[in-house]
Image 1 (cartoon, one colour):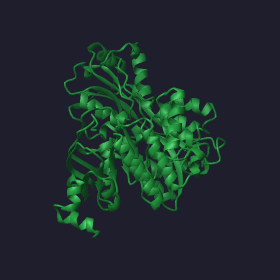
Image 2: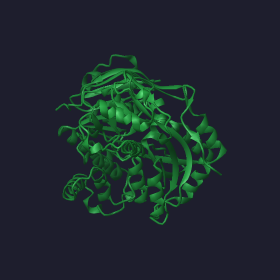
Image 3: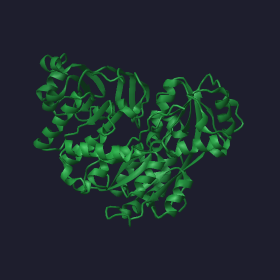
Image 4: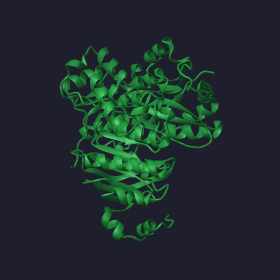
Length: 266
Length: 235
C-alpha cells in the first residue's frame, strides 16, 4: 500500500479586537461544512467572544486538548472522546449535533455500491472491484469511522494495494483528491454537500445506522496549565446548547438540505 | 527552481458566503519562477484567494488543480498565527512529531531553525511570551520544518515594526533562493517591490492584472493598478 506523507492542516481564524478570546480545536469536516461561518459571528455578537479555531483531525484535536494548547475541543469520535474525559484531559463530554457519513464515488460506480445492502457491503464491493478509494488517513473522526467500516466488513486495510490511497489530509483536500482521481471516499454529509469541486463524483450510498456521526464539545481540564480559559469554554458550551444555537444549526442548509441536526439536551 | 507541484490552475473559481460573492469568477494559471505576490486593497479577496489555492477554502464553483496532488508539500502562515502553549522549541518540533519523525532528526531540525531565526536563547521559554515579530518568525520556521515546496503567507508582516519586517523579508528571500516557492499576500507596496518576481493584482474579488512584477510596477496595464500603485484609494 502506497502511503502518502501524512499532514495535518492547522488553520487559524484570527480576529483581533477587544473581545475575549479562546481557542478551540475542531475537525476539518466541521470547518469544511461552512457552519463555523455562521456560528462564530453569532457567538461574537452574543458573547463578545472570539473563538479561534485550530482545524485538525479528531485525533490531533484531542492531542492538542491533552497538551493544554486549546480551551475546548469539538470533534466526532465518541470512543476517543470518552477516553479523553476518562483520562482527565477533559472535564466532560456534551453532545451538540449530528449528521451522517456518506459514500461518494464516480457516477459510473464501477463497484456498484449504489445497490449495497449496508456500509460493510459497500466497502466489500469496493475491495472486490479494487476500485480507487481515497482515505483521509489522518487519524480524524472520519478516518476512524472509515476504518471501523472496513473492520466490520472483515477487511484489513494493511493488505490493500495501490487502489487504497490514504492522503493524510483534511476533508476538503481529501475530497479534492478523490475528485481528481475519480475515486470513492467516505465523507461526512455536510462537507460533501458544501464541496464545490465535485467533478464526476456523486453521493452513492448512505443510510446505514453505522454511519451516524455525532459531534460533541469537550472543555479541556483547566488544571493542565494556567492559560486554559475554562470559564470561556463553559460560556461557549452554554451558547452551543441554547435555543439560539439550535436555530442556527438546524437552519443551516445548502440547496435546501440541512447539514446538521441539533441534539444537545438541556 | 520550479516545484513539480506547478502549474496551479484555477478555472471559474467562485466563493460565496451567505449569498455574498467573496471572490470570482477567477481564472488563473500560476507557474512561478520566483516569489508571487498578491496585492490588492483591503477586502479585495487576497486572503480567500490564498486559502483557495491552499485547498482550505470551500469553493462554490469552478475547479482548482495542481500538477501534483501531494498536499504535504504545502504550508501556510497566517497573519496572526497561533503559537502553541509550549516552549519555542516544542512549537518547532510539533509538525515533525505529527509525522512521527525520529527523535534525533527532530532535535537536529529544531536546532537548525532555532539558530536560523535567532531564537536559540529562548528555546525553552513559553512561545506565548514572544514578541509579535518573534512569533511570526517562529510561525514561518514552524511551517518550514517539513520542507514544503510551496509556502503561502497571508500578510506575514502586518503590524510588525521595521526591524522585524526586515528580518522576516530576509528570511523569505533566503528560503525562496533555496527553492521554496512563495505565494504571499500583502498590501505593503514597498514589500511587494522588494520581494516579488510575479504580481497578481486582486480587485473586487477578481484577478484584475497579473504578470512579471518588474513590468507591472513600471507600466501597469490598467488604470486601477496604476492608481493602486500610486497609493490612491481603489474600489
